[in-house]
Length: 193
Image 1: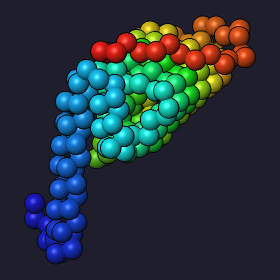
Image 2 (image 1 turned 180 degrees about the vertical axis):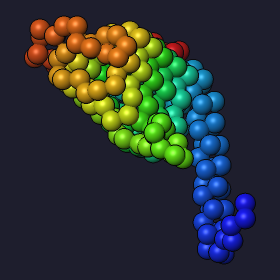
Image 3 (image 1 turned 180 degrees about the horizontal axis):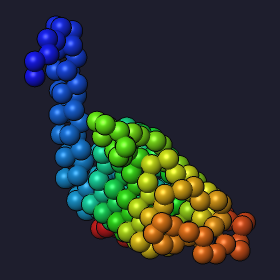
Image 4 (image 1 turned 90 degrees about the vertical axis):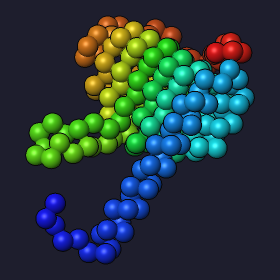
């Protein structure tokens, strides 16, 4: 490229590239493991990869993780089939949270106004007793408050206050959850999902 690089910068680039390839290989293996029809086996390998998974929580088949070490899942939480959890910045998912099929939680995106179109990352927090409907997309920097409900197909671009019900693109408040004394446990997941 015409740039004279020092030995140190060459070494740093080589190390970054090797690290990236190893992470991509880990993600590939976790994607394959995601199709093993056993919660116990998947959970074992997900934890081995660095995902913190609370007691009684399950991740259904087909989940994809972009950087598993930054993902924290609380107790009694169900992550549905075909969910994508970005993980390039921290993702914190609380207790008794229910993700439906195909939910996508991203925390990295490109800066569209930057000359170099560089990536930016922000953490995502999903508090306790949240329900996220099918095919919802949660974008970087969002906090979804306790007890909130996100309707199917919504795109969450901003924080959601506790107990609010939202839907649409972008997600807007469509109601409020009346019961604010939440203490339920989620049902058990099907064995071969």
